Length: 136
Image: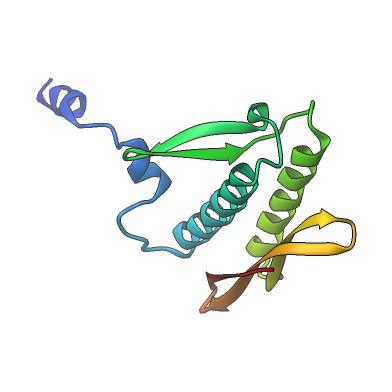
């Protein structure tokens, strides 16, 4: 009975703790964090640029910060393609194949106005990610 009461009194982890844990102690936790950072980065870039309709995004909160996260929206083929591309990146990260992913934003078919590079390294089977960007 006392054990059941203790279990009921435990606080559920906040969404923030689930989204970004306080400590990373395993290879799997590191992989999950890198995947989340990639998805959040891609989502924020596409959302801030207004590339896809609001229906292509779900909402998550990190403290008072509202994050718009891309989701599979069958009514928007562009966002659906980006989500599938990100999922392919996840698979390549798990296999430690992915070294660079690039998101380029064009104003017309011949002119790149923004480019984001996501570079990955694997140290002792633990993925690490660097982000760089160029704006013209």
